[in-house]
Length: 320
Ligand code: ACO
Image: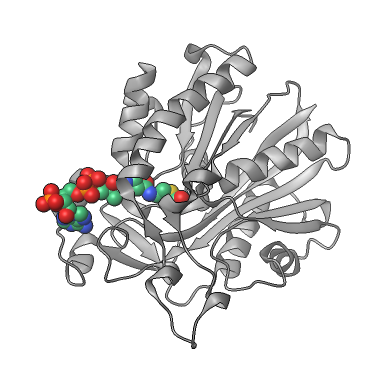
């Protein structure tokens, strides 16, 4: 037996910031941002916290799954931007939704976080330890963004997504995860515990070498997808959808070209949300689920990639 997604949920903050608003803050413009990234607007958490968004997405996923909070045995929250160091965000979600029987912990694997959380829950299932899990990814990247840096502030957005997993799938798929700490410098953000004389410096905001990340993604993600397919003896033609981390439309188009796949198999919603790091994949999955785009039995290849560097992929057979 293996993990199956039984329900999805998401939450996006009320406040929407379009590219023209960003052009009031830094020297940029709507056309440049749209052309280079595909992004038109993003949701920004003005009043919401990361744990609030995580809990809202979790409640919606439970409702969608028709599951009771007490059934949940494991909660994993993927985040790099919680307002809390302790308690972990997963414990906050547990309290908010009343999942009193769940074991809870967080992971930080940046934009690969949701896929790795899925892989971890699936591994717990395979070990016979749990059979129902809630995985959540939530980010408030706007709080870590330097709004005077046009290299980064055009990209990021806030939001959360969640999925309820049950150990009910007949077929087990093997996941693939890689990391390259040697290239960690390409995307960094220092913890604010490291403040000198109580002042923020640029190091306490997200700092990114955009071209290095772009090259990494375009090279490693097609390799990752091929490795996932090979490991599971699945042909490319069997994959209905590639649900990828929503970083930049040009990255996703380049990956599709490398694989010789039509761009329509790489759905995108980054135009509305920007790059929401770990939350981008479950935000997209939830949108596809609620629009009725996903058919029972379809194989979905999920792939996350980002800071660390980390990259991770797996196959999910849609079962709702
Ligand atoms: N507005 C207008 N002009 C700009 C902007 C901007 N916001 N930013 C840069 N430019 C200019 C540059 O100054 C440069 O001008 P020049 O040619 O006169 O020197 C020109 O545009 C091109 O700059 P590049 O940096 O080469 O732009 P590029 O095409 O690489 O696009 C971008 C930059 C969008 C950041 C791209 O590199 C990218 O998307 N990289 C991947 C980023 C990513 O996905 N990061 C997230 C990873 S996920 C995670 O872990 C959080």
